[in-house]
Image (tube, rainbow, N blue to C red; front, side):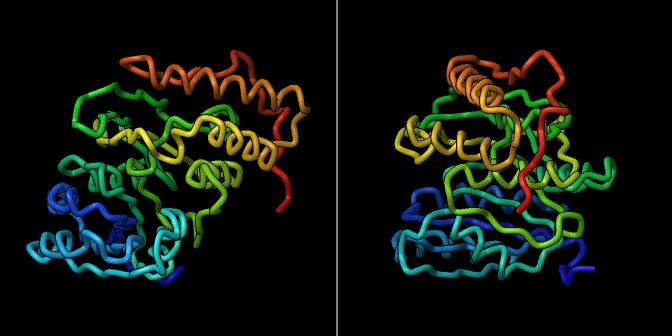
Length: 273
């Protein structure tokens, strides 16, 4: 058994000059009353805005830790620092401009136990940087590798992971790092299931890394090549399905992912590490 504390949720928060979100961050964590929580703030902005967050966290009766990087190392690197230092059996990730509803962590942990899952995810409600509602995702009740290789309907702030089941893990710092982790988990037989009566709020930043369409397509293609030994033409089809979903995710008020209408399991094989 890994030396993580059973029942404890480690909340890992990359923080980059996001002092204006301090109150919202603290509220998201404070309303998770039914679970034991520890907080790891990874300051990646040389302290800018950090005082505001620390002031809010001090009001909570929740242990928190602040770890500083050398400056703008990126969210993937920051999350890996938090994973290395945290002690909880369960891990949840909260970005500074996103928000959790009341009871979100408890519902996710209950689902992990009831469905013997390694990872849970929820629907996502998207807002712009001014707080205006954009749209909502409606992911399937469970996700297999054959579905994930085509598109990823999961938002990182809506995920809770059971490290007793997955073991130690870290993010690859190569773009779409969370998506690659879901592919890794699913290809190794871990179950990913939906918590149906919950959602998270995600701010869709206009200048986020994933909003760069050329980079996003390149990252997706690299992930497909890494995790699928299928023929080149099928890899191209997977990329096309990803592009279709990328458009639907932006244009539909209720986004439901689409997949190829035939079974592709026999054509898939993860590369050896």
